Image (cartoon, rainbow, N blue to C red):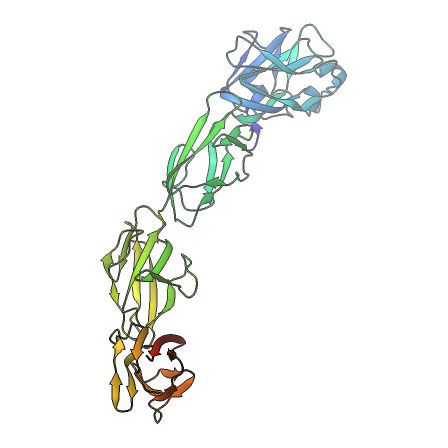
Length: 447
């Protein structure tokens, strides 16, 4: 607040019960500095003129004007005769104990206008004359105008602004308690308080902050956070403004894992809580997958394809067709309704397995041990006295490619002849589809 003349128009009290009519003490605080008949005149020295400011105030400057400032056509007022010589500014809280905050000695000027090097505080101020006029030092006080500049002591804020969100209710100096909502992404906040009284000291959570300047960063935990702004005036009780900042819980996940059985399959792109769409590829034998979401917040609800799943727990198995499947939807929702939705589009690879495998000696089919099953990859077979056998593999998928000991099976080449040497011969069948290769091994033995 700007400093103003605090004594202007206020009620005055003087040390003597009498004054020279019509020069009343009220004339010395009415703002008239140029009319000689508009002044306070007393014949009692020493003496004083006191003003009740009505509440404690900070005084920064004072002024006193004497007769040489007055204009008249008949009288010349000289500073040598009609200026006050020795006087002071005094302050008090109770009119009983007075403090002299500034003094003028042997004045030769027609007025005094001085800023105080040290601010003064008081509810009462007075102009105290220890001697009279320069030309009559013992018997007269003549004061054209008395001024004391300053402002009321205050423990109030004139404004309070936080770097995020809006105060509830709207700020007013007289309201001390507020709340403020911020989203989960806001993990810190700053406070900019402005004091109504520039001489007041402000602390934010115990740390001093200059009025009108921004505080340091204040960390916000999820949930309720209390920020205290204490305003301490130079005199009187402090005021505490309290802002409860509520940081919303997180609607995000911290991780999202895709599995089939004990195998984990990576997401593309790598999981990040603010990215919503992902893809993944699983092998053909991954007929089902599960999703394990982990929530960042504590109050969120997670649903996988509409079914609630506890944070950190796997969903029920989700069936996967060969090829591109309908995206898996994972929703993480807060009680407020705020939610984050993630999708995973899973592609299940075409089969890289055989649907059948036969080893023949001429027209005779030799017995595989164990019996053929698509997921069984290692076999033995006895060839008896045969010197060659035919290996006849058939893929589950028409898109797959097959080799037997490096020789390709084609639409016209349905089998590969394997020459037997020694007690055992290995036939290796490789089935490749969609970049995935499955290898079957058949050991062919002779007695």
